[in-house]
Image (cartoon, rainbow, N blue to C red; front, top):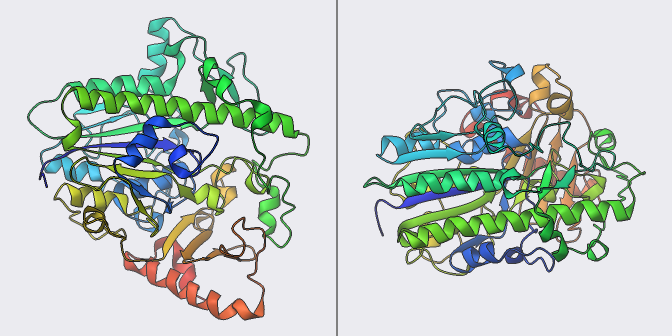
Length: 476
């Protein structure tokens, strides 16, 4: 095994775990990702550590759950310095570790963890981020202006379609208008600057998060009338926590099935565009004779509900929001076509990639490396996995009460999934009997011992690196 492999971590934003050919979708066309899966390892049950952007990204990069890294909700410049709204400087990321080990480290695309315009956390050799929000220099928007093409990501851009509160979408007229294309263009610049040092590239792809902008020719592959509707699209949420009925992105009754199908067609077409751009990265690595000594990992920060339970977007603990696509390929080192059923937690990628590079985190983390298992073509040991998230009021309505920043925690162990809701009734789902998570059985008398046991698992987990704002889970 090479002791100094290059690493390319491609992280999408809001891609469903099942929206790809390698995940079994008969609809979504992803030939390059399918090739990556065929030549490497596919984690069939990978979960984010929080179904919202900034906390999830912080966990993937640090190996810590949100209660430990304290990025508890999305960063925005108006929240600069606020508790829970940025990644603290003393948190060690994979970039910090690899930079100290002599890697050339770069990031392209959104950072989304605080001070997006300032190089930090080891990514100091190539910092090419565009801002999430705020009035800072923005290489992406500057590029649009320099190239003289309309910026379709502006809030008032013409030609966009939005059905009530669903995912906004439109088409581009010029390839230069698409942000994933721009991200990969800059990523290839970084790769082509190869010197004797190994490199680590964090290719942060904002898509398929809305606004959904696609090359119009891709839509022909997704006839709207053939788009299947989710079985739970009109879920009445009976027996579920009351807060779910009031969510910002609960699909309104005025949205018709035909409108919903059209929106999903654009979402799928954008995933195919992402796939094409991933193919460009793989081709460049191959052309430069780098592919065999480069670990390529592909994940999404969190999932997308896409109509499940009557919602779009994320921020709920349903499978579609917490489960993510996850691939790792390393030709001639990792086995080809390995499908891993054991769950991979949203804190496991960082230590796994470091372990593959013969490095490790210098500080205690929540995650574990599964490198040894997959190098030997076997399943990692089963462990329960967890996710945490702030309340919808803290995420969407700027609630500032400290308790709102740590409102929900999930544990999945085998076929059972339990969500401990701080301000509402709890949820328990038997995913074997009820894979669609339609029936909340948390109130059944015969389930109380199971709930007590799973609460104990949560208490043990949060104490590993200190309970932080989830200390309330120890008070029961």
